Every structure is written in structure tokens, then in C-alpha cells.
Length: 166
Image: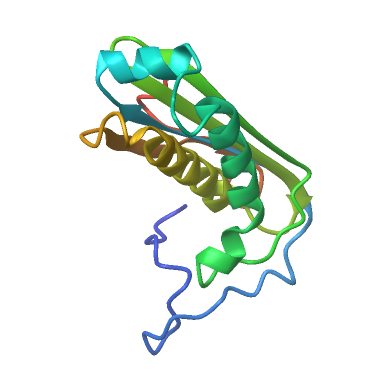
């Protein structure tokens, strides 16, 4: 970015919020991966692992909630474009070091704008769903670490979070 200062793309010259016009951009393959986690008591993690949570299959339900959320991102985030996603995946893995569950979501499309918000929304809603389904056992759970791990495609190029361990 030869001497260019990065700016806020959703703020116009008069300081008003606006939706970015992506009409002149080229269609490219765009992929984004985000992560987050839900830290919980070891006993709560055991309940989830054994399938004994009162509300049912926590991991399967959270995975579906994350996928559905990615598809609804433009309804939730005011300046996001409605996108025709070609792929959304949500992986939920046990992390005994937390202890808890780690959520990783990937969104993909071929289009004019990126899918970072869709990946981040998928992770956020999957984590919230885990909390909702297990809160009867553990109201002290903590949701955290939500961040973009990497993205590719588009004019701004590729990005990889410096701490991404994948």
C-alpha cells in the first residue's frame, strides 16, 4: 500500500456510514476462516462429550446454528452485503487445555466482496449456542478468542493472523 493510509471503508467523506459499492470489483474466489472458544468446567465438557446435556446434541446443534448464522450475516450486520455462499463449514473440537470447545468456521464464495464477517458470525453464533445449550449445567462459561485466522482473495490480498496455529 505505497504510502496509503488505511481507512474505514464504510465511512464516507462526510463521516456517514454507508454500504460500500462493490459493483466494479472483479469476482474472485474468497475464503475466510475464523475461530473462537467456549471455556467451561471440566464436568460440563464431560456432559457434552457424553451427550448428557439436558437440551440434547450440543455440538451438532451449534454446528448447524453456525452454518445458518453465516447465511444470515447481512440480516444481522447492517452494512454487510447479502452473499451467495458456496461453502460454510463449522468444526467444533474439544480442547482439554481450556477446558472447553474450540470452534473454527470457514466461509467461501466466488464474488465481489469478502466473507470474513460470515466466518466470524458463524463462530460467534456457534459459541452462543454452546452456551445456551449447556448453561443449565454451567452459567460461568466464558466465550472468547473470536478472531479472523486467515482470509484469501480480493484486492487486499491474503491475510494470516500472526498467532494462527493452524
